[in-house]
Amino acid sequence: QLQLQESGPGLVKPSETLSLTCTVSGGSISSYIYYWGWIRQPPGKGLEWIGSIYYSGSTYYNPSLKSRVTISVDTSKNQFSLKLSSVTAADTAVYYCARHTPYSGSFSWGQGTLVTVSS
Amino acid sequence: QTVVTQEPSFSVSPGGTVTLTCALSSGSVSTSHNPSWYQQTPGQAPRTLIYSTNTRSSGVPDRFSGSILGSKGALTITGAQADDESDYYCVLYMGSGLWVFGGGTKLTVL
Image (cartoon, rainbow over all chains, first blue to last red; front, top):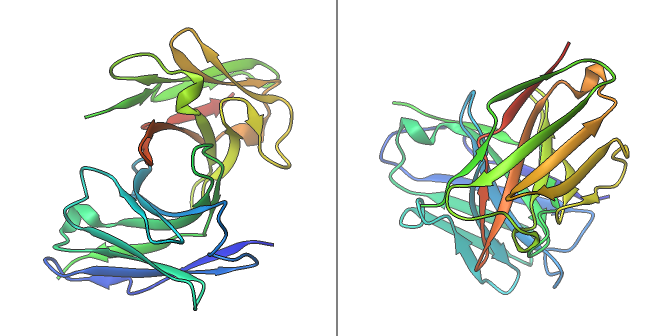
């Protein structure tokens, strides 16, 4: 059974870089079928797609965040990661990792992790 | 910038039918956008209900259905139950690997 688990600091200072890792179990991140993505949800607000990566390293980013986002994959550890630079309070959110097929919208979600940006 | 719009809130009576919609700021929603729908209760991760317009995710009751209605993606709940009271989000595939979520609809069952 597929499981995705987010991990990383729950508190990040303004202007610093937010770093999260998603560990995948019950499935291979090297599958040619799936993409691996990050979605966030500010407290009390809606979902925002951040970006996705294919196991080969091809990346796709939300244009509004593209200048600050890097998503990478480590096939040896069955993990993928998110880095978001120059964070502000507006980046405070629950961050979800997810597996999805390229076009269908069939997302399998992690449980999410809250990241707060504050000094 | 592409904006996907959903009704902010909706109310349905127990046993009733409700249709939530998902619209594009410019143009019509079509099957090529693969509209997909997620249910979220407070403190929980979203749950995938419908993907690729009208395919139910595993374990989702058949009273949830997806379609294209006119120029919008649509989620219809038939025979609403109390535990359907949740937030519902749609997402559209915009091509080139890009996805856009709608703002969500808060559904009340009363």
